[in-house]
Image (cartoon, rainbow, N blue to C red; front, top):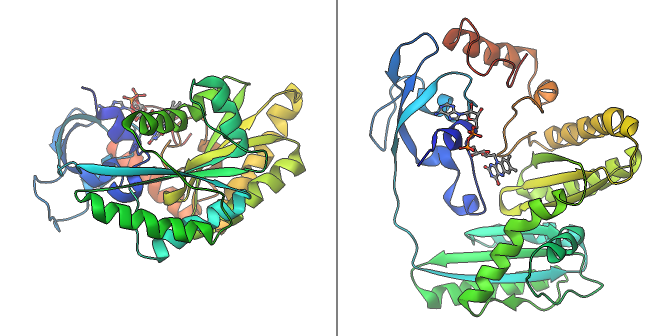
Length: 324
Ligand SMILES: Cc1cc2nc3c(=O)[nH]c(=O)nc-3n(C[C@H](O)[C@H](O)[C@H](O)COP(=O)(O)OP(=O)(O)OC[C@H]3O[C@@H](n4cnc5c(N)ncnc54)[C@H](O)[C@@H]3O)c2cc1C
């Protein structure tokens, strides 16, 4: 199994809302530096207050600081039970508002995924999952709770359902069988591919404090209208992580190349204004590096570039990624 890329990108997934991302499970790494030395970044311990945290610096560094060759993980036991429900909403903003209400009430679902109506329409044409979606359903939340005691989980679901109804949702669908659970997850996992198979696209990976999700979603749509592009939004709502797929459809090449980046810049500025940032899990790479001046001021950017020069004085590792 190859996990270096997952560490390098600090990958996450639907369960990150309860379990965190890759970084939360890495204790120590062996790294080959661009200058040829081989180092260990930390220690194989659960607590470590010794010097700067080089392990967490390497995680998420997108292969620009060193090559990870060995990894020491923290392991946790798998939960034995889970329940899954799908909730249709009459308004996407209300669905987003419901997300933070669940956490304020003291619940931490193991997954809390948002899909706006277009995402559902695209995916139902793409996978063979049967789902009754009414005309007036404008967004869905997919919520999973997990643990070891089924009775407790049923009680949690009841309370979460009560919270959902406060945000004007339609009837909650409980996945009764393993097949139903599998179908709902298959549907959620295929959304990205379904949207992308439709048209040329640009995928943004916006992230804000989860209470700001309704503001972000509204802003993305307003900015899209201003610059003339359509976006399909879905993602890890429990983390405040909204994937914004901008689709080209019939837009001219000129507008796609010149107007859309201005809109993306505005979306990222909104994220930062809301105390969020420009990538929750996909990283910066080549594609997003021209936007790094939005989350970072000149001093912070200089520090980031200084770290790169210290590790890689000759610029041999992934040159041009993250920064020029
Ligand atoms: C379509 C798509 C969907 C995605 N969806 C998600 C998602 O839902 N959640 C999420 O968190 N991420 C997502 N990602 C990003 C994801 O985190 C990475 O693509 C994936 O984890 C990288 O693993 P990989 O093995 O494919 O690495 P690769 O693609 O091979 O490499 C990724 C980067 O890591 C570097 N790298 C690889 N191995 C090492 C190593 N040993 N040491 C140092 N650097 C190394 C490479 O140079 C490269 O820069 C998505 C990416 C794509 C393209």
